[in-house]
Length: 313
Image (tube, one colour):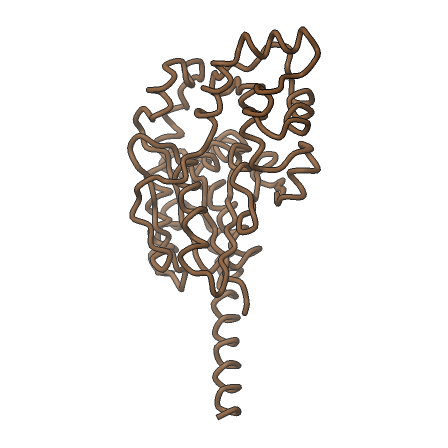
């Protein structure tokens, strides 16, 4: 039986990429819409390429998360995004609703945690046919979620260059399995989130250590023989294990997730076109037929199934 496909959008990540990748496009009224335009470019591209059966969009909630409570310095050095970016988010949500795409967000959690939860729940909700989850993101943190059911469609540069990560691609790049990326990042930290790593330990050394010892717990139980490395690891042990709790995505967020409510069927084309006209996105209106082939293809398959059943009957 054919595998079904779910697209989960890391919306804030895609919006940030779009805002910084595209020039400051404005409407005749002077409304800045570059993030909206870039987000929709990626959205339409993903639908055309993967023909999803289900779509869900996840957003950060504008409030401190559980990570801020665990580590008060979390993201403290990151400058706030421009208000012009945030002002475009409501319009993106409005268009997603026009496309019948449900939106998920929850106070105290980041979009990545919601994504992790949906990726964890989706395969269990409907095993036959199996659900393949593809996460659309510009954040490499989501690579830790890759497994037999899950891949990451990563925005590698701007909104045009993309990489589809599966288990093999992660191993080719990092030399370890997706689930081991947690241990690697706990060792090297994440400057963008103000998470300090162990000094002198970079990605290559961390990858080698995790490959050799399998995980942090085993690494600290046995410890490497090099005295300087051993000393540094012991000195920063507490920070390393705190880091792991900070970089690990929560896959058990209490959200009202129902896979069938994410089922992507035909949308309100009139409403979407009206919204795109208001934003003066004529080029995107012209691209809508590219994603509608999915519906015709599905209808043709249904007709074939009906014909086959009638023949057998």
